[in-house]
Length: 137
Image (cartoon, rainbow, N blue to C red; front, side):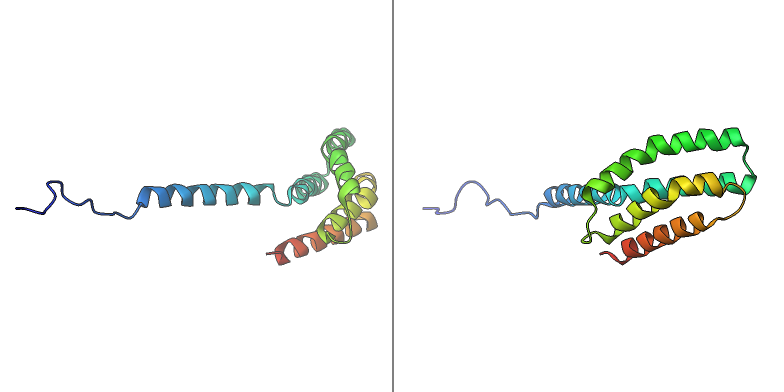
């Protein structure tokens, strides 16, 4: 009598598709987290770059006023959010808060033609925030 099973034994294969799907999910999640990380810094930095461009080209008073209104629309909610969440445990947020609350709007008023003390202070806080961000894991 034949003791062998009429059906061949099924070979176990490595689940490549499952591993690839999990890997894709992990990479996608990581990219989303990294994109959302330091969002306040990215928005403030974008405003700073626009400011430098206007300063460089010698923008008109009308362009400055339009820009200033745009900045209020974009940055005021960030200042409020930072104000509610800033603590010494989050030095990046502290630097961004000080930069925006204390120096951004005076800089927009008095550094249109040449660099002012307010601009120097704003940039110092922004540079320190960037240094802290780059130091984080």
